[in-house]
Length: 407
Length: 113
Image 1 (cartoon, rainbow over the protein chains, first blue to last red):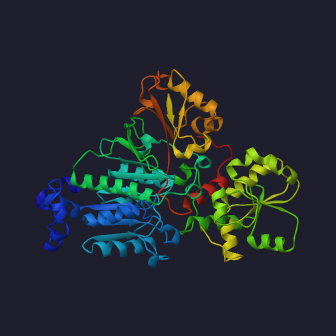
Image 2 (image 1 turned 135 degrees about the vertical axis):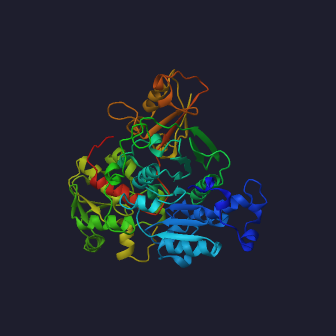
Image 3 (image 1 turned 90 degrees about the vertical axis):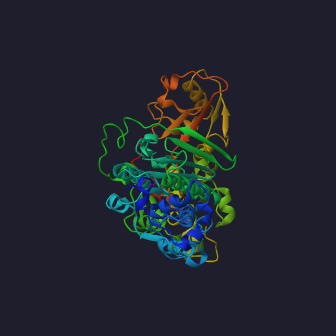
């Protein structure tokens, strides 16, 4: 039973220590003793302890939510710390769920932390989500977004949703009893090629904080049963303009999962639904992806070369043209001296490379994904000998020149 | 009328956040927009000229899919259109980049939704 509807007599009592801790809530009539007891009885699941999940989980812990579940399979990396404030310099390299638990328990030892050190999948999602009062989706990819949505609809658990891109964010509450779900807003995911990526795009560190806190606010309101929920509305946040707008969302009667005649009645294969192949191994996706590339010497007709081979050719002064297809601001962070044409401009600027048309060209980017795309563009434009540097400049910094910074 | 362009699509409008276009209906305004910025077309429309299912167009505060006249809804100078794209980020490092890259290897070429 959702805590907002539990009879007052069944709520857990507060100790004197807890009464002191939560006094600023207790003197707020909208929370009060009963509200604080409802928070203590509540079970909230945070899917992801990254940019959105970090501030979200911290504030829920501070507010006195009794049980907080955390789902994450990743480990803490130094580049997370620009925004994932639940982790710290001291926990770099640790599992994110362990790192988060240290911070949460330090903030509030009264709470219970349930760690799910796993990737959420169709096979385990219902089992993990079952029993929670509300879910906060702080994931970073479309497959998991649809998976969390469908699991929430099937189990009847509301989903406090937030997502971000560069300086913009979106938030809502999906899968409430009468409200729309994520699929009512976005029936299908975009094809992968059209999605600008986060790592290319970057993100302003405070933005996930802002959105994660909006999710936390909706979670708390739901538990307390107060205020107007974001269910049925989409909040658009633009941090640069500092503008907040809400748009009306409607429940789609033809929605395949929450409509009147649902066709999705069990969890499906979300990787297939989103048109992507998920790496089999559990670990940072980027690592898995690089390994996958290194394992195949030719991908889509583009030979993949390693950084050692590039080094050998440079040392041997072999004739080839090295092209960097990252963005100019990335080249300012670190470069290996190659001329730069960002992948997005390559089709338009291919004429600049006409003198290299029959020369060997090696394309590189940060980690090998964009340069593969660029190599295909060149090949399709009639370039005869194009290769992709597997692992990109990150692999170069790892294996050839450790003095270079990694970003 | 004004059309608000979200961050992920500003790469195709030369960085413009808001574009002013003429047009008597929602459809005409979008037509003007994609004529001015041809690269936007494939992000908003399918090859058959239908609005893509993962792009939402709002006329002021309403989803045009739920307006009785949909894309033929008349618009005036003071109306505003907003393009709402799907964004997935919670922003883990590299994960989205890796997925993006993986997709480029494995997706069927020319796959359209």
